[in-house]
Image (tube, rainbow, N blue to C red; front, side, top):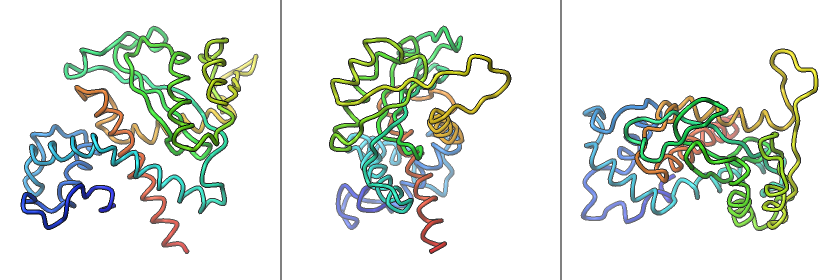
Length: 250
């Protein structure tokens, strides 16, 4: 991971703490939900970790890391490096005093906060992400997510599976402008109890994985860019664990 995180030389004069210790401090915050000022004493000072994290976020280090890991894991799974299908969905995070300035009210979830719109491939690996107030409609983000995904994959994605919240001509046209067809996966007419819907369960599982990182259980971030970057970091940590498991088994 060092090539992604080393924005300057490891032996640079301004570097006082090892890069690995700084990254461990970030992982501790995201995994446990710890406040910055409560970082343990065996890690670098909180302000050192925070400032370096902001540099990583501006350089989009975590997005680049996830992109390369996704291609590796897809090839290990016998898939093409770039996907041809994706799944779109969103999750609403309860707001906190830090994030309340951008909070909106999600009438469907009856929750005030921020909404994280995500696009994942059919294996559940994160492709693109957008953070908006919770009162923003899911279908309104289709165009931006499609643009990001096509730019990332080189126009490889042709199909997107979505739920009924993405129905309507506007969402279909926004996706079609980027060469993507929307396929709505509907509930069965007579549903009783929990039903595992085809394709859609993949993105729900990805959200469940992200929720295991306690910093992402609510919207604790003042900046939307920080919340989005932490989702990519959580995804990178999970993908690294999967990759390590595959390598040790072979």
